[in-house]
Length: 335
Picture 1 (cartoon, rainbow, N blue to C red):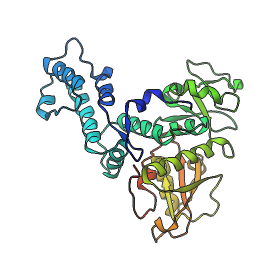
Picture 2 (picture 1 turned 90 degrees about the vertical axis):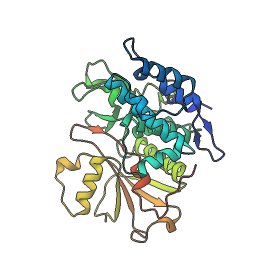
Picture 3 (picture 1 turned 45 degrees about the vertical axis):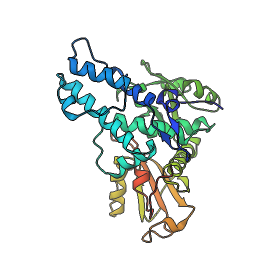
Picture 4 (picture 1 turned 180 degrees about the vertical axis):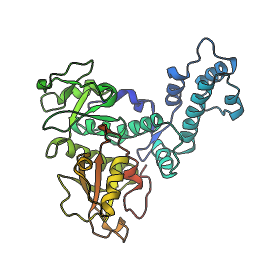
């Protein structure tokens, strides 16, 4: 079986009887060994001791006063965040349960980096055994911001960190007519190069074609289906749509902040201008295998998902919205 996303830490974790991820000392030590937490030469003795002792015993209790005694303000903040993250993981039986507790609390006090890393490793678990590189590439939207790659006819998404800011254009080796010249070079994932995804999965240097009618939207729908099944134990079918023609938005979920705003405006009966509508990248319809799970107010009306981009062509998907925003009567972790 082919492996992928080696760097996410999945192989440092154990599995529960139901398939959830169990935190290990090795996983925690990987965080304490990160460069951001490595005390520099000028670090105070409190910081040095804390770092040394947590590498030896990553579960040891740390009092707030101990962190407050660290001389450097940036170091104090880094330790406050990483210890809050560690304590969250240790309070819950699995990483999946920790993530659900975090997003259901509606008060995420951790930097997005920690949330994205948690999504990354949970998705690695949910997609274990997946042999479709298109699904894996689509799953990258869950935990890595994407940027639109300009092209006349295709809707291409490239990794924001790889492509860079809004001004550089990436060189797409499969679309040479772009004629751009920058430091970033990405391939468009296709049938001819899909097999190379396995050795490049930690590089995030493939562009995904999300144009309607291609494999991209189907792959993203499959990822969302697996995500919901793994975390909620809810079976759904998700179908990509090319348009919402006179659709009644009884219930919708924005897969990002921009899409939520657009959905809210449509739900209130607003007519959106053409510029706003061009920010809608993908539409999906959700069907529940068990209609009895759906709240009575929705009944058998279609449920829609909307993915959009910002005005500067950035896509920041919020996968937690799939867990907290759907009209499900009971939400229970499956792991």
